[in-house]
Length: 438
Figure (cartoon, rainbow, N blue to C red):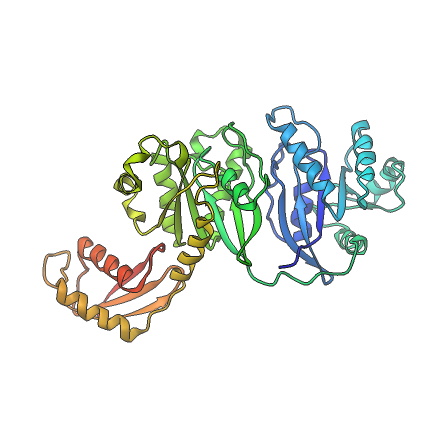
C-alpha cells in the first residue's frame, strides 16, 4: 500500500474548514457545527481528483477556543499535520477582515517550506469578492482562491489549483479496500488510546477529561500488509444527559459509524463493567447486524484479574448475554498487551459474517438438530422443521420453513441458533432467522 501525499486544511476555528473538507471529498465525512471547536482530532480520508490520489486532512483550529479545555493539544496536532503536509490549504473567513494573528500564522506556515494555497471561504457573491479582494492579497500571495464551501461556489478552480500544486508524480491508488473497524464505547474507556497504540504513534488526542473525541476519526494501519481503517468515535451516552450540542452531534455520528462499519469493536473498562451504558451500546451493535469484538481494556489495572479471564467473561455475559457470540479480548492500550489481536480478530469475525453455507449442508444440519432435540412451538406442541436456506450475509440470514402453522418457542430458537453458530463457525457475528410456515 503506497503512502499518499497529505493535503492539510488549517486555519482559525469556525472559518469553515470542515465544510470545505466535506465539499472537496464530495460527502459529509467531518462534523460541521456552528460553535467553534467541533474538530479536535485530525480527520484524514483518501481522495482522488483529476487522477491524483491524496489524503485530505481536516484539523482543529490553530487558535484557542474560549470553552475548549484541549485547545493547546488541538493546536499541537494541527501544527504537526502542517509540518508533514505535501500541501497546505490555509482557510480564511471571507465575512471578516484578516486578524493580525492570522497574518502571523500565514508567515509561520510559509516557513515550514510546504506549499500553501490561501483559500478565502464564505464568499457567496461576486460583489463580496470584489470588495474584499485587497484585504486578502496583502498577504503577498498572487493566487488567492475565493470560494463558498457551503454553496459550492468556485470549488472546481480550487480543486484544479490543488492538483497542480501537489508535488511529485501521481502515486497509484490504494491497492486494497481497508476493513472498517468502528471503535465504540462509553466515555473514557480508552478508545483513542487503543487506536494510538495500534497506529504506533499518538494520532488521536487523549485526555482524562471525558468526551475528548467529538468527531469520528479514521486511522489507516497495516497488519501483515492488510489495511485496516480504525474509526475512533465519540463516547456514546444518553443524549438526555448531554448538554454540549457539539458532543450530541458526535454521539449521533458514532451511532451512524456502527451502521457503516464492517466490524464493531466495543471497548469496555475492566475496572468497571458492564455498566448500563455498555449494555445500550452492545445492543446498538447487535441491532446493526455487524460482527462484534469486545475488548476489555485496562486489563493491566484490573482488580481481581488473578481470578482469570473466565471469571470476567462470565460476569460480562451475565448482563450482555444477547452478544454472547462475540469474542472477548483482554487488552491494555497503555502497555500494548494483546492489542494487535483486535485486528486479527476483527478480520476473523468479518470472514465468519461473510460465510455462505450450501443448502444441502444446512438441511443435513437441520435433520441432526431436530433428532437430537425435537423442536417445540410457542404453544408447546411439537413442530416439524421442513427445510432451510441461507438468504444473505453480514449478518448471515436464514429462512426456516415449518410444517404447519405457529412459531418456534423462544427457548428452542435460541438453542437452534447456538447450534447453527457452533456447527458452521459463525463466531463473532449475529445471526438472523426468519421462520415461515410451509
